Image (tube, rainbow, N blue to C red; front, side, top):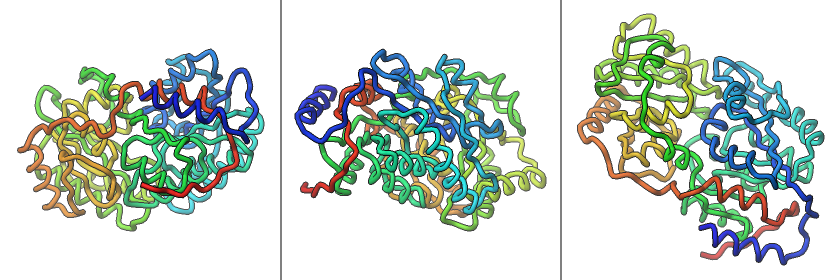
Length: 405
């Protein structure tokens, strides 16, 4: 894998029209959500530990808000310095708040990127704040590197992801299907690297050790005996749908009725999050549910340890598609949020309907473990990304490349 990347880089170095080089490249990584840190820990450690790179961290959005898991204390544990903080989050939990947050992010990042003057702006995924980062960097003539382009999903996130791809210069895709899609979008094949998923690389490094006392101290609800079978539930809002409250209530009732011990995670701060949160609060107030414990967030090591031991992961998180498949954990994927994403046999789909969800959970628990799936895994993903960021010739003027299979 690494030798193939080196071969590409040598070829690129001979081409013209590239940016002049500094002795020490500045790589700016932008964190606007807890997941940007949780799944990139190994990559950040690689970048911060390389003497030929200067890692610049910019933190903003919900990543600075305590109720969404403020990431600053975690970064301090790593000993990684944060260069800039952005106050760019417009709260409200609706589409207008998302759009205004994206607009405010452009204003904040324009000043930040002009001040930091990075050589590369590194962004991940498909969140609306990351689209603002890609657009701002592109207009400031910065090379944009994107992790996790080319995937498909079932809501506005897919459009955002593909828009970021078209604004990016270096592409770190996580699987073969995504690699082909990025090429089909007219991107330069010399700058599309199939390095695997940093999420799965991180998961592969976590040993199973559950801190049961801590998990029953945080959050609210029933006591979970982690020596006995349990399931995990993560249901985020779907930004392109209007019935998020009703949808989560169907899942809540299904999990309640099936009676399994369940650790339920709070939704992320997208449009519709208030609907989901209100549904959860209403359910808790009116329905005794001693089998369910609700938590806002836990550190990523504990999350992966829990996932490894779970009977089933229920909801609409990408963790059911990626991390769960790596461990062979059965997953029930509810609704449209992950529609179209490449997945393994461990995933069973269910509509937003209580009885269908109950049947799917029962089927998955009865089935038990699946064979692990390596679709998203490649060894040393973070090391490969670091090497490419350090050595690939940089450019800013993009051209459309016709695709031929």
